[in-house]
Length: 82
Image 1 (cartoon, helix red, strand yellow):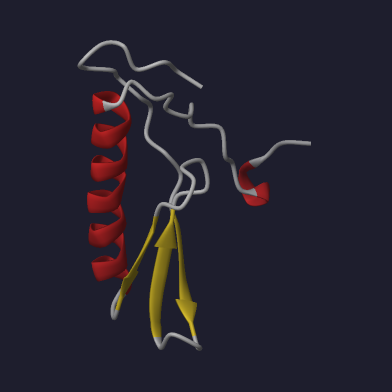
Image 2: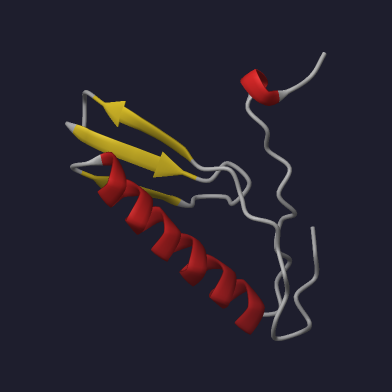
């Protein structure tokens, strides 16, 4: 975790998962490194736009409250080397 004492912190971008949910009849986008950061859209592009807004709001709130911001660490198995 990175402590957010400064106003501007450069964070490498986070991995975003986007998948279709039969139950919700739409797309879900989530950021595994940021707890509870997810969004819904009828199209995958809409879900992506919404999760990016959620990420910005999450990071802004963490900075304002001097809370730790997770370092991007999530890597899907398909990108990991053995």
